[in-house]
Length: 182
Image 1 (cartoon, rainbow, N blue to C red):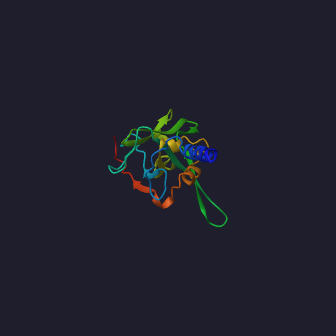
Image 2 (cartoon, rainbow, N blue to C red):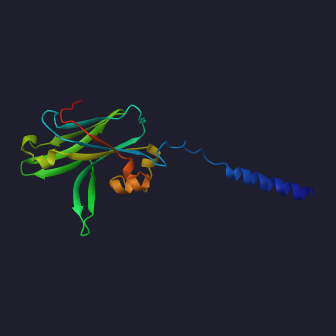
Image 3 (tube, rainbow, N blue to C red):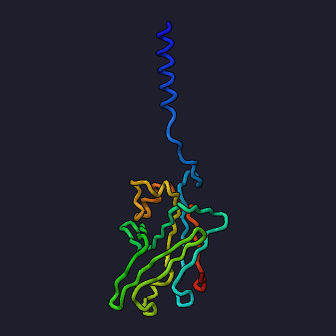
């Protein structure tokens, strides 16, 4: 009987020990299981705004020091035979080589804002309206623990959105006035 009690206690101790593990991360805030947030902005790069688009995160939105902020540009759209339009997104920075020089779409951010700007060796005044007007960007804010997942492809907006369970309908869309400067 003593042996049976010792064996039972031994297996009970193993069972409770096996249930104890490394402490996990606190739950990630999000809408219905979403692991990040996306803001879509549209604006014009002009001389008046120094060829910069400035977006300040809403006061109700909290971004943490370790979070990852990525920006994607709507590069082009492809129409399929069935009439469906596919958006083609590219992660910034993106460079375009012209005969006149190089244009680069780039960005920087703080915990309160994102600034998307044109850079390069080209004179921005020679750019076509298609290169500077009605430009659409998506700003993705991801928790560091999620963004550092090895299987996550941060260069692919659609893949990242699927992995983060971000629904297109939850994206906040903002039109930025061309006179906005930082």
